[in-house]
Length: 256
Ligand code: ADE
Image (cartoon, rainbow, N blue to C red; front, side, top):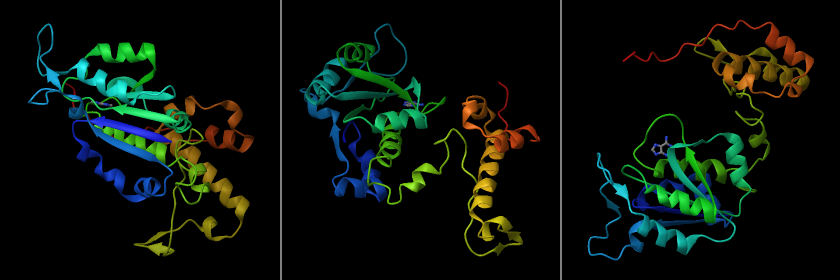
């Protein structure tokens, strides 16, 4: 897969040279290119923004500069991603769909965003999705680009050494992952659950499944309600029917 990231802060993407994604790039599994948007400016100040038409705070990124950049980088198989708090919220299903693409082009906006005609024009002439990290605001698209490349990159064949670890993790089957333990068997008076040291693989699998269901019900009941009922067996249903469904403790948010 090829991924192009266009940003006014190329150094922000430096972490992608590290760890699994960095290795995937070095191994040729991910063809990653980070570009400075200012490459496509022509004025002395290399300006990428201007004041908002109609007034208001902040600056808006210029469509002419973005247009030149995207025209140079878009191919027939490109899926353009525009990070934006108003976009489709990124989840594992969207990540998996993006991992099947040949070419992602992530256009990182800053300031008050990119002139809306850029999304309109490339939405008409290419495939384009506005993507949100969640219902909060960050300062620009770079942090979203980091998240997207990391989440998509680890699904590319050969990037994660043991593909089984991609199967048994949170959100893959619509549930949160079960708790994991390592040695020592007792730490600060806390014991590893006995079933895990029993050597009984079927019982371990059942215990883990129960823990996944319980955790999801306690922490993310919204996920359970979206689950395909056919994905649950009788034992799963029994676990869910006998749950104590008191809500999890959450950070208190003051009323304004
Ligand atoms: N830019 C600013 N906030 C964002 C968010 N929540 N997701 C993606 N891009 C953003």
